Amino acid sequence: KQEVTQIPAALSVPEGENLVLNCSFTDSAIYNLQWFRQDPGKGLTSLLLIQSSQREQTSGRLNASLDKSSGRSTLYIAASQPGDSATYLCAAPIGAGGTSYGKLTFGQGTILTVHP
Amino acid sequence: DTEVTQTPKHLVMGMTNKKSLKCEQHMGHRAMYWYKQKAKKPPELMFVYSYEKLSINESVPSRFSPECPNSSLLNLHLHALQPEDSALYLCASSQEAGLHQPQHFGDGTRLSIL
View 1 (spheres, each protein chain N blue to C red):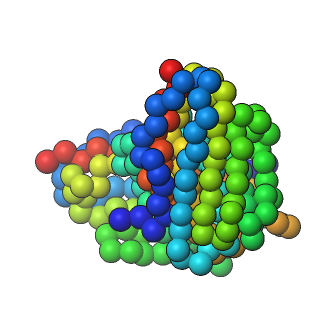
View 2 (cartoon, helix red, strand yellow):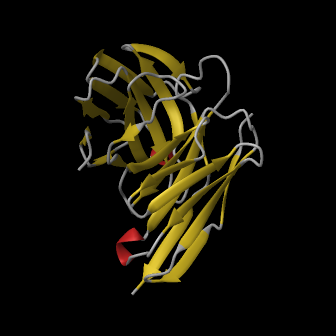
View 3 (tube, rainbow over the protein chains, first blue to last red):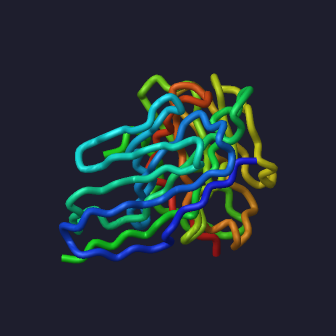
């Protein structure tokens, strides 16, 4: 059974700081890992998806890495801005083999606050 | 702007009412999902439709009834809900219901049961 953990639960940083959000998973036979952002009262916005064959994905100021052997993924945000304030969730498919029909296991999320 | 559209954005209903939540996507995706999200918790999967057929029902009470009339539409019919069903209901879609497919979410319907 895949379990996903995110640390820290909350993070507050000043604007301009580079930061790292952590996501750990228990089943290293992972197919991919997806990072989402959620603003209060809104749905999830997909940020990055890393396939198991990849080690990194980049989109603008965001960089996500995946280390299957250690069971970890990190989301690096460069030069943080107040607009980056949101909850960040990571999610992995349940079950490495067969058909999981898109079932995802989510971490509990990291609440990020970037203050001016 | 999201490519998955959910209506209504907010819904308040009594425990004896019948209402429906709607979800629409025009990305040609063949898998659609319903999630329930309580405050400060991650989303919990309720149902998965693949090629308009129900693939997964995560032991959801029968007072929630999903329907997929076509590949672009997904409904969630509600009847005799309980106060604990108050939550944000999220719809998502993906190319197919496979392991390698990213899921795209709508903004959700905020449901309050009186």
